[in-house]
Length: 340
Image (cartoon, rainbow, N blue to C red):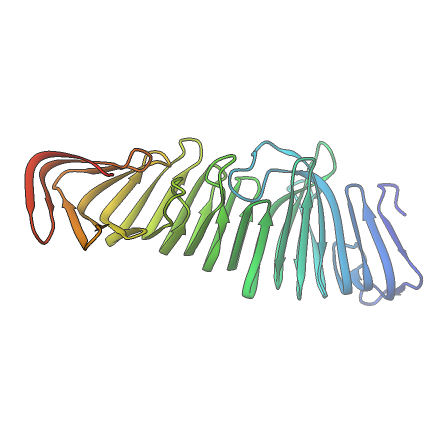
């Protein structure tokens, strides 16, 4: 044990002076203030600046970090990290400009599992490989979780409460509160506190804590609050702002929203609140009305915006509006429709 608090404990330790390396085939414990590393089988340089754990490696560190996924509180809080994998695992110390320890890169392979806990929440990450940077806080001496680069086949999994993501690759940056996932991304997020999770599918997802951006054939289920009809939206790009409880969907050529027997198509759809839609650009609303003796399809078009209020079942249109079916057509500058 050194005067700086570094401890290396094992049954048998081999020192190769010619190669300037430590090694052991036994179980060992390596500890510094704020971090503990253990496993079976160790190969390290004589400064313990870079070393490899061969079997059953485990890292425990305590530092500060914010939440992993969106809509979590972004204030820094003390967080405990536990990292395990089947092995091998490589740990490489990083030095600053004054040749002092600035942290460590940890490269975990095969069946990597990360558990993060603080007083308010718990998060779990499962993947094949993970490259993690632990930043040493010069004031506290503890190790803050700063960045994680994750990969897995067929997918990695991140779970934090109702927020859930699966993807082929992911990068999480705690210093900027940014998460970026690519490759067949699926999962769920909570659009606002207390609401039900929204299920999503996309090729790319960027999570900025209070904002979400999804791209590449995006499918959303449950984004709107209305409980009477199932709503599925398909688009090319999706933005959501948690603080404003509002979002925008973009499509080429169309955003398509399917609600029961109704279909809404537009180049762009705004969601000013969870009970409203505003259709912009080229657009059309198609609704199927069931009567006692027949069914009727009614279509709505307009050059201006079409606003749909889900809670009051009201449709408002402006500028060259048309409402038509097989049997009739109505055209006007403005049309206000109250649905039954």
